Image 1 (tube, chains in turn purple, brown):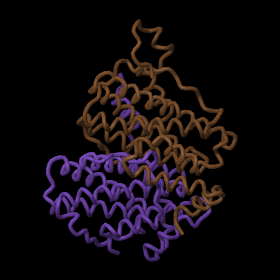
Image 2 (cartoon, chains in turn purple, cyan):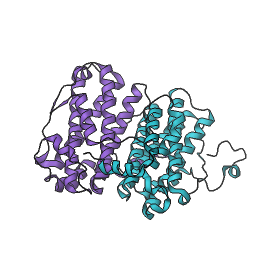
Image 3 (cartoon, one colour):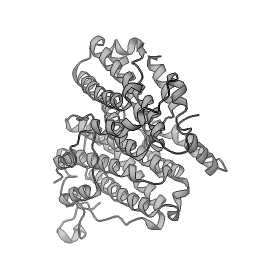
Image 4 (cartoon, helix red, strand yellow):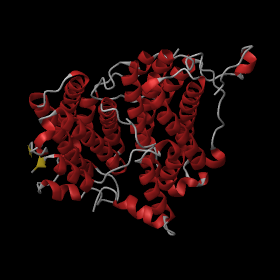
Length: 205
Length: 233
């Protein structure tokens, strides 16, 4: 029989501290320009670099800020019940750890928590469910979209996060009775598309 | 001005007759609708080949990328055969049966895509013996969870080692799909779909060890091992 425990035992390192270590060196390179102008420069460099890693981290920082705020508000306001509540609580716990790891990696250069206006999405459970699917799918495609722009070390750290976002996406889709994995290959999104997707959900900078 | 400038340029350069753009458009239309199951096999191949472009001829891939892709191919063979056999066994019902139709089609599509990408360098499909796990729903789900979690860890371990950016782009897109499958199978099995905040990678040696421990890869056809063969992948 397959021993699923065996796979979990294969590696028990603390992923968050690894992310911080890997990226601490590159964090200082992010220029103090307005967030989205910085994001739009991602990919300009011909090859991956620590400086570009830091710019990409500012992008995924916005993703994680949005997820944390979204789940926090929904858990307070949307009267979530049953498995949907379990999902929201679990996802919030994970997103908080992702956020903390990325903030540690960026250090003093980490962007401040933005404002959010989620509207109905954090106020009733059906709207929450639909938006959670969108947000998690954006997270998966956002991380995937940057894979080829990252240095190998940072890619390894980001890969530990993206599959967790994919698990969240599939989980909330399954709860909604939707196909949990709709594509044979998840489509990547560009930084610009991620920024637009987050704004549509409620990110206000 | 985006993270995919170079990739888009690459696509444009590779897409001289517009065939790829056309395929992608058809693909998006097909995959986002009800025709998912029919389109999945053709779809993943198209996406992978599109993204992997120049690597299509196996000669265009580095030796280490070829080795990694063959390793991934074996895992995809394993999964595709497992789901196909479970579907054919008739043991699955309800939500599980519906999910497996989707997941099985996608895993078969991954196999087809890797076969096309590797060309003559592709390893052959091994013989499988799933030790009865495809013949009852609960053992099936338990095994599906284990295989999917294993695939996620395997892709995660190899992705940073890929040299071709185009192959990497495709591999990360498959990696997250395997994670979706893992979560889906976990949900169906009734266990938490996402346990840890950080999923850990696994080395090839560890993955090989786990796969070997299952005895799913048979030394000889099951027809010789048992008097009454049922399903042999």
